[in-house]
Length: 171
Image 1: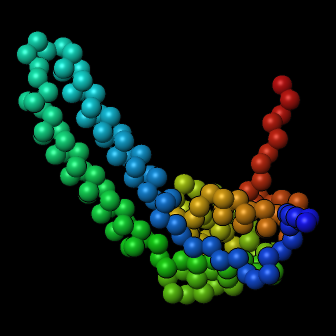
Image 2 (image 1 turned 90 degrees about the horizontal axis):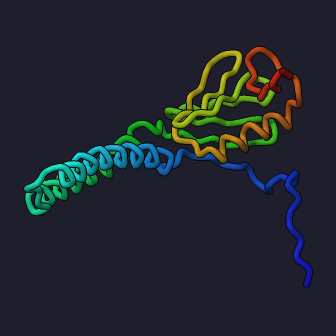
Image 3 (image 1 turned 30 degrees about the horizontal axis):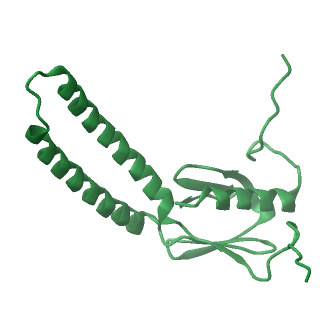
C-alpha cells in the first residue's frame, strides 16, 4: 500500500472559504484577562510578604469573587464583540480572485485589482484601486494563505501599494 501526499501547488477541488474565527478575538481578551489577573495577584502576594498580620482568609474570598466576575464578564464580552463586529464576513478564494461578502454585500475582486494585503492582529486589510476592505478576525494562517495565493497569481511585480518584505541593506 502506497500513500501519496498531495503536492503543495495542487489546487483544491472547490473554492476555499475563509470566515472570521472567534479564537482570534479570544486570544486578545485572554491576554487582557491575564494582565488584569497578574496585576491583581502581584499586590496580593506583595501584601502577604510585607505585612506582618497578613492572612489569606482576609483577602482570598474577595479576590476569588472578583476574578470569577471578571472571567464571566470577559467570556460574555468576547461573544458579544464577535457577534457584533464580525460583519458577517466571508472570503471565497476563486481561481480568478476573491469573492468577499461583507455587511451583506458581495464584492468580486480579481487578483490584479488587489494592490495590497496587509496583515493585522484583528483585521486583514485588502486594498484595491477602488476601496479598502477591512475583514475582522481572520486567522494568521488564512492571512498568509491569501498573501501567498495573491503572490502566486500576480508574480513579483511590486508597486508602491503592495506589501512585500524588503531586504536589509548591507552595513
